[in-house]
Image (cartoon, rainbow, N blue to C red; front, side, top):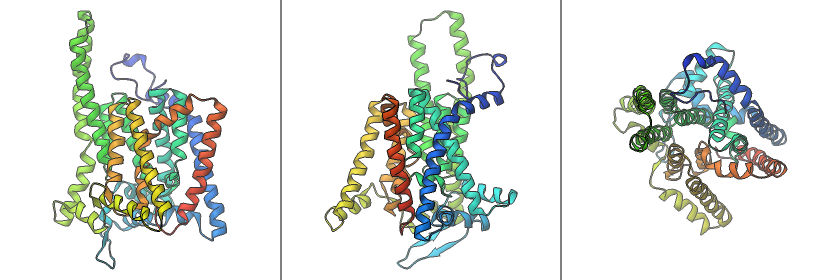
Length: 411
């Protein structure tokens, strides 16, 4: 395959095509998969528009000006400082929302004739395509081009895939996380750390990307030590390899240092703003969020299993079981440790958090490596069967997305 980043230490600089040509070539190669992604999302928006026509609701408003989108737009327009006091003692502060998406909304609305909300839609649209591109490259690098295309289609067709078209931060985060993971796999450590730092300015789960970068560094260091003992190679070749490794080590360490800076910077800023070392956790507590090891979520499911909403409780239980089964399949698939660490951390943070449980499917959406076992299985089937299977999933996703956004609660 053609990498945007050729593996470190390969080829002389004069033998490599210019960066712009490499990017154009990689984009041309990715264009079919990106077209599939765009078609899936376009169908989801079309179904939402038809549903909205009969329900008397504006699809544009559902996508750009409800729930979290309103908070991001307010931050983009007025900065931080808005707090909503609710009955029952809950305090909703806009400090709960990380700054990168509203920064981008503010910048775009200052340059183009766009509202902050519409700028958020544009960011999500572009970020989704960039995320799909990185997802393709990861799947292709690990299991072949066909598996990469299937992975893109499955990620686009998630039941909560409509969020990828909303003015939310999930698409932006997934793009940054996926490119960081791809940079780890291609041993581009400074890029990996930089993307991780930006992901850490986007969502609290940016910590999962930091973990992936650190795991990649540890694996690379351990592999180098093992190869030093196992390799028997001519002296000249060994000396060249050792020089390459010495040059790579500073970049590796720099990437590891850069990775947590965005996440730590926002936590520190909120701490200073609130006058408390645990300021961000206090802000989340005001929203009723936090981490309790999954006790609240378990009680939520149990309350439905042993109450009048048995079917809903059973569906939740099956859904959690399916997600855990997929992660076990990823382990059996022997995915690279950075991917396993990233997906596992995203799942852990989503399933052990308390708060509004309707958002848990959305919180797990960035864990795209979970779909790799399914993508590989589809890639091994005949084309007609694979296309039919994905087509059914796409249709179900489009209908469910429209139903979900027309509900009473936020996604």
